[in-house]
Length: 509
Image: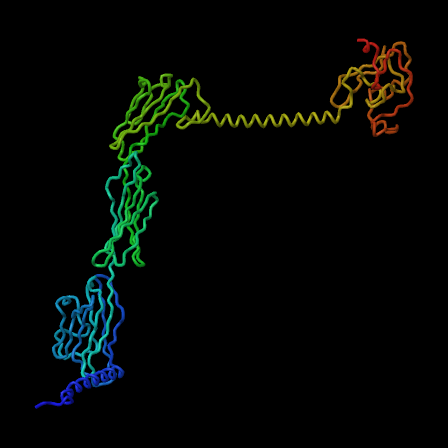
């Protein structure tokens, strides 16, 4: 029997209609509140434990849960992890069997409630990082699912090592790597920083591993030297907010550095107990010392004791010379020298290693110099004081022309108003004033009748000051004293241009 075209298309129309009805039902049931609730992101570190929650929310019954399936989605493929069935119970796939469990469901449990199917991941691995799907199969609502992204982090393994256990300082001064700091298999990678007082340079190398981790390697380079020995070198690795640090102490080997002590620059004849000491800074320690004298042999009375050169007896001129000390260790040999000079007498300087007597000489010399300077200053001050005092009190004339009357301010050619004695005696000049020791007496005025009273006070002194002549006229501008009219000068006296008179005997001498 042949069917009509309309009859042949009827089953296809029924199928399409059925599918459209299913879509409307599914959308309607979702609109009525059936959903799967999960966290969007979950993270953990390698070796840790995390929970992946999955809750079915059913606001309108009746809805029957037929099965719950957990799946891992990675690179476009899906892999079953665990299954929960009301009739068959729960099961975990072999790849996750030892590390995945249902939080609220037991393996042997029958007819379990499947509204909460949270699973627990133990001992996380980097390979566990993926998107996980929790899918609910229900009737008559159909399938409901949701997804959570699991991120797995890895703390890096951090350690620091010396490149070589023995670091040798070479004269060529080449750079070399002395330590390495490693931040291995970190996700995300760590950040390396060096902390040290050493002058050096850090290099960084980054390697990305197949499992998604990153390894950072940093080398520290220096020029090995004596100063870098026993210096601390610290590597600090920062991962997230954590700081991990490790330190090493450098062991740098170097040749000896030699220094000779003992000569203080004051080796004089007959000085006792002198010696030279050879000090050497070396790593490893010095194994031998050798003393010698440049351009000659050591004195006979010298004793060598390891790094010390002892001079027996008093110092002699034979001790003069340049002494050399060679110090040797496993790295090499270095020398030091000192030039010794012998003097006849001690030098008044304090030298290193000098005797107590020698060291006390500079102090005495310094204090003696200070005392002498003080005495000199005091003497100069006293001399200035007396000179000024003498200038203020001096009123006489130290020339051979003696003033009989007046004070040296009179006009040239003027003579005193009194008669002049024939003979006057004058004392030696003093700092304060000139005083006549004797006026008159027998034979003082030979053949001349004095025209004044011998007892007058004016005759007892050879001059008078301006203050004493205040009753006369005084010219302030010329500083000249105005005398009374001139009187006759004695026969044996001669007037001078400055107003003074002298005897003819003194004039012709």
